[in-house]
Length: 390
Image 1 (cartoon, rainbow, N blue to C red):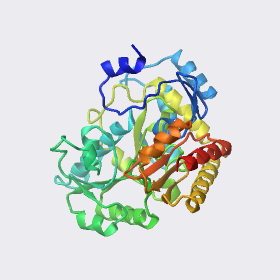
Image 2: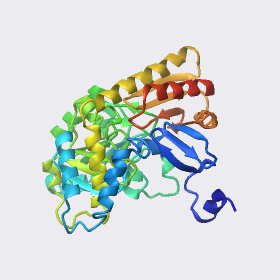
Image 3: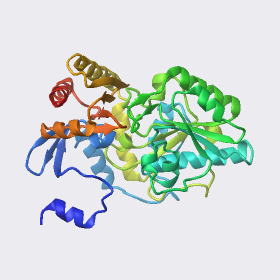
Image 4: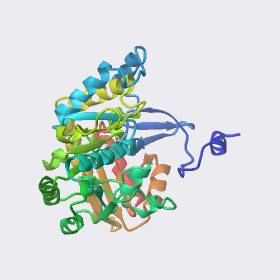
């Protein structure tokens, strides 16, 4: 019995998996069970920030795993404190809560803003406003905040008092706000929705509204954070600071870790017993994430992400003159979406045959989210294959 058949026999079919079995990876390259190599521009869906089997990352993991893997959050350990110190210093925010995934980070943020509303606004301040075409994860609260019906099928009734408005539409947002509003959650760049960046003026106005109305502003940076935009967080590209930011994906470089960072006046409503995570922030994942952050925040790294991202975007823009199926190229840093008039899935499948891994986004976009260490030569190779698939 082959491996894929064995997998189908015992694993729930929550993913429509491609008939590929990967056995190893190095840098931006993956190798399947037949020995075929693929240029990886999916990176575990924006997770493998330092690529595959990064030597320094492997060393950091080995060092910590031989010392201590897990204790409990009833006790302290140095890696979690050191990681939180880096995150607060680099983000401009104050306090961290660690969990295991982006969806859990979103759950923590939603809980935090509701507790804040009850304690610091009024007892009826329970409404949360989210964006249409957003994506915040698969847990119950996160899926309720997600603004795409296809992810919510057969799950109704959803979490109450969460309302959706069009993204980048400040008038629609203002019309939805009431004295009961305790939080606004949005992605600075909508990822799963199709790679749609926020307008600067929109984010600035949202920030002002939250300040005026005592509303917690949450930026979901699970996909756009940890260097992908060319800054540690995409909000730093805009100069608009949230009250809470969610993070996951690239933070662990492939090891599961998530979390939120919040301003002190919001973070203080979480007290012992209000929230917790058994595995969140254990010594192993924190030591791993600490190495990732130290690498990303080293001088010049973010500059290289911005330069390579601009190079990738310009190369994709240049294809438009020869390929009328390209409608628009969107994004910043190394999160780029190419909107096409053809089926993105067809292009993804063709690229896979040619040794390039891509992924769709939204209804009609192809997403490019390579490891942040990608080279210009690898970008050239990927764009050439993509062009051939068009």
